[in-house]
Length: 287
Image (tube, rainbow, N blue to C red; front, side, top):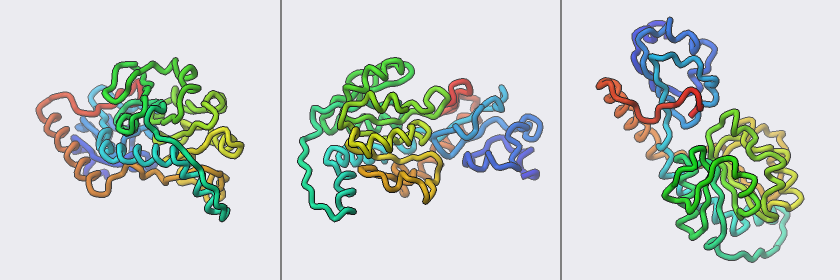
């Protein structure tokens, strides 16, 4: 690293490498004087926060958008699973219980998507495809092509009791940590369901476990946990009506790395021309 870092003008690298003890993250201005750009292979940069190490001559970009195609398919799967009560049927199967569950169509039901970036936008698109009424929450409250209405974050508590399914996909920041706590889960409609495709710390897992065990919520599909990997001793593994994915729902084995390379090469060309880079992370907002 001491051989190449002082000469590097750009890095395309995993966030995990940047957090290794040997990597001089907070000494980049001195150790890498020519470095102008770091591209993180991943959408979230919460493991690099606080981002006060980004000096004025350095730009951090992420992989946001590379997941978009696959996350739409995940959204379709998760919404259909929850509406058909597949997590509950899996619980019954493990009990050797033949217990038919009759459900209606998703068309006309309400989907609340918290975070309308590329990940949340993919789930919103899936909901609209299935005929759901899609409501979004995003910081700017600006319109989104796959949401019928969009609100600012302050409307969360007002909207939770109206949603049949709630999907979480915001970036992890101090403001979104435990955005779905015990109070928020209690505000959800009885029999509603939850999707978490954001980050594990968005959800109070103890409150989610209680809501699923008591039947307050009908089911949940989570692609993320806190911590990760989820320890074998965690009680979450045995929670009824819960479907856990090991943080791989939107990773496309065929398209992810080519998409990453394409984005990185486009940004390298923009950097060479002195143009603004795609997916630049705002150090103040954290995304």
